[in-house]
Image (cartoon, rainbow, N blue to C red):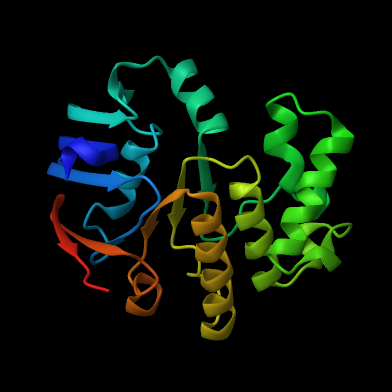
Length: 227
């Protein structure tokens, strides 16, 4: 699988004080596939995701993206990569409360230099695609939890990244809203061709993935799904 991988982690090690967060973790993600990272709390799932995204740097091992060594990049190079080619969905959305939902979704485009009118036009299309066009002019605090998370998904996908990292994206939602978010999220990601790395402890969320990787004690066991 390594030769076909868009994003790879090889033998990652990372400690937080005396705690081993990653202990030889390896993972390979192909372009366009959805991989669910499963495992108990404290197993290293989120730490692995943060290393794959270049947010954390492992103490040993290598992370490669599209043939480039993330672990050898400077902080500014990794920031540029995250802004342009990676998208992020977090458990609580982390939308900017002072901005409208439309402005939140347009933000990645504006940061990359897109003009305001064009950025808002594209953002509006993405809000409609995620079925939350009616909250465009509302601030995140005026939207429901499910609506806010769909706005966060729109923001993650608006710049058409090659990889989207999602850390417990439905963890704060009830089952009905969680199901709707995942349905729209995965459909939109598949349409754009984005790979998705999904951290979850819920089997119903992992069921949306193409493949599951179980993280235990800082190590990974990859499992192919037959669909």
